[in-house]
Amino acid sequence: LVGDPDFTGSDIQINNMKMGLGLRKPSADFWAPVGKLTAAMQPEEKVNLLAYIVPRFGSDDPTQQEALSAFVSGLEPTFEVIRSKCPNMKESDVQLVGSELLASEVLVPGRSNREEFALWLGALTDVDLEFILAKRNSFKEDATKELEAFQKERADEEQAITDRRTQIQEQVAYARENRTTIFNPRTGKIEQVEPPKKGILGTGIELPFGN
Image 1 (cartoon, rainbow, N blue to C red):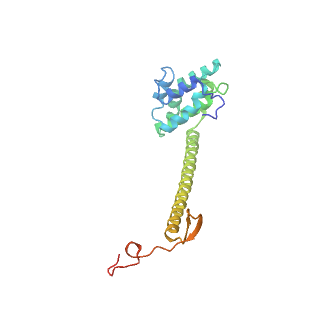
Image 2: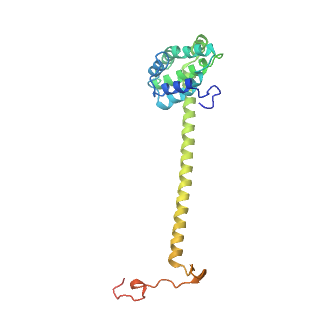
Image 3: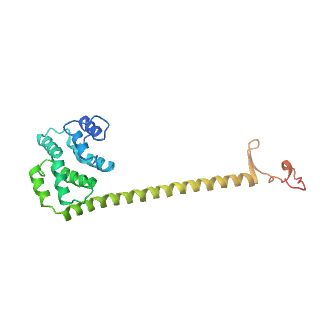
């Protein structure tokens, strides 16, 4: 989202982002129908869709408002075309492919209008649409693998730090128990000390039955 040059973080964009996330009452002319028509999509995919949509709000360009209207009105016809071409495709995937294709082509003014998009979509075959879905899912799988690798690397680093801290603590404890010198603050010198004696209270006297 922040990588989109049209995203400025304006009040209008933030307000629309909150509506898209369900944090505010959705607008009746846009977010309510978008939410209803994409209800089968996975939550993370809905959030990804916001990255296409939110930056398009707050523009003074009238063609941008037309593009937003074309997007929301084009969702259901797009889904119907995909369902007819791919009857075995899951509804969540139908909505994912349809919404992202429509967003990438129609939301940005100057790319395609609804009529041009409809002609292009109509020319796609079921193989084309399945390939687009597989390609889209591969991005998600790659991102998941990268996240898992990052999490493992971070966990390994944290464990190494914990192990090193434990090792240092053990070394300090051992040194305290076995040290032969000590700093005498009264003399300001390092002095030899006798190692602690075994037995009762350090007297060296051991009981026959053990301590």
